[in-house]
Length: 92
Image (cartoon, rainbow, N blue to C red):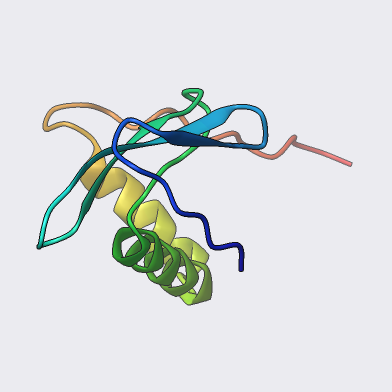
């Protein structure tokens, strides 16, 4: 772990694209500003961990194929018909 001392209005650069600026220091904590490209996700740790836990739970959930079709039908707007199903070719 790298430990750096910064004063208000000073910053540090991460990976050449992300800038972290110290906006203020109070008895309750430090206010940071973060400048990053839109494609870089920035989350507080507790939010990041919650997202990761939800993703793990979703990946572990096993939804049978017939239940997936029922979920799709249920998600259609009322009065909307589902797309026609492909029929297997006749003969052979």
